[in-house]
Image (cartoon, rainbow, N blue to C red):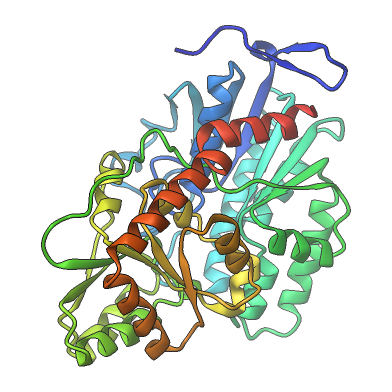
Length: 416
């Protein structure tokens, strides 16, 4: 039940009535999309709504990660709906093309941004506009579609110029330089920026961005996701999420080959979809790996059960893009009380999180023998798996759960 009036202390010690506060979140991705930036944006919106804030979301018709609009959203019957006290307006975006590269992605993002800008010009003016990147074009649409007096906050989940450059997503000369200039120009029109890690904050500052930056991890529903006992049967290693190039998933194919050579009785499950799925499946088939299989994501209602399927979770990363994006899935894994192994460099943002949480293990990227060694040690140590899982759950409750992130977003949005 949402209270009609909720009060919080302001800087001056005066209490603000949030029932009269309106917040509009503009995000290309949102519920019911099960992966990527959609779940943490959903949790942020619902946390604010539970405070009594009038929250609305402007988004696209859901398509991620398959990049095909869901069948029950292809007409206009659900372009206006409400979910968990959040009013949702959806925009049809016609340019989805599965398997495309950077320019295809930019085309989709530009399509959404133009339509969002046009919609914003005709919508009631909210007290606060929260603009989510990806994509930076969405943030620009919010700048162009709102008055200069509006309070604008950007939530940065990906630094797209850095990702494009580090992952060599384009060979067009100067395109990443132009993207960096555009990010700087756009983000300097925010009142505040929120991002996911200190490394991402440093990367944003290096662009020449001047508004204050807050670090808030992706919000995870730690009431919905609960720790469950390990499953009996075959020992399972689980990856769940987007199947894209920045995830470094080829490392799991190399890992599966090493585990087969060691004759370890384990199964690797990769759950999800994305533009790298077909290529990954072909690699598995070419090597004749029977210990690895690809599956679709589990429904959101089965999230705890799905996460519990993995005795150990796997979080491979392409190290060259690690400073420009943080895998939000790791907070869900920790909420489920499961340990995971992440391929990350020493001193990286993920290594810093490992030190703070003591909830997972890292090993160097693209070293399959080290990956297999690290994994074999953890397979043979159930007490260590249990300890890491407990630490992860405690860390999420303190820093990334709904209550913790609700307090953090209150401080950012209402300046107290």
